[in-house]
Length: 191
Image (cartoon, rainbow, N blue to C red; front, side, top):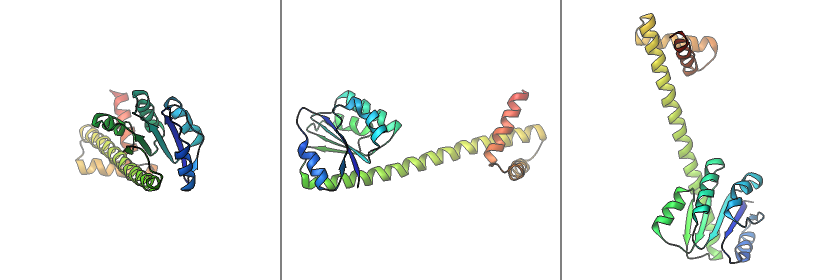
């Protein structure tokens, strides 16, 4: 059973939305009355998905969503009556996964949440892959710098410098990038 956190950023009651979620098999967590309480509610309640019901997303709401996205990313579905393209772009930039205009029909709720969860999962995989590639690139730069130091100081060829790093890596049971960082740190200490 998926746990849903509702943010009511309007004056209208959202009992119908709560009922539709419950009937669709979702666990509705205690309602958050304002977007300002969003980050704390996400930390405490750990929802699987966040739904924001708003007439038009305010700057405060978008800022809180961006903070939540940085600290504890969750799929976010926003129901709004505002179809302004700049506002939609700002909402997506703040971490909104799905932006739905012109209200909510209970029969559309489950497919909308399913799409939001799938898009969020796909985006999460892309973010993880990007982070992995960035780490690999950073490691490659460190290894190249350490090879350069070995080539310069010990008059080795590039292949010999890499082999030295690799041998030291196996001997110490560390990644080559860690050995490279140690060499760079020692070189910086000696200069």
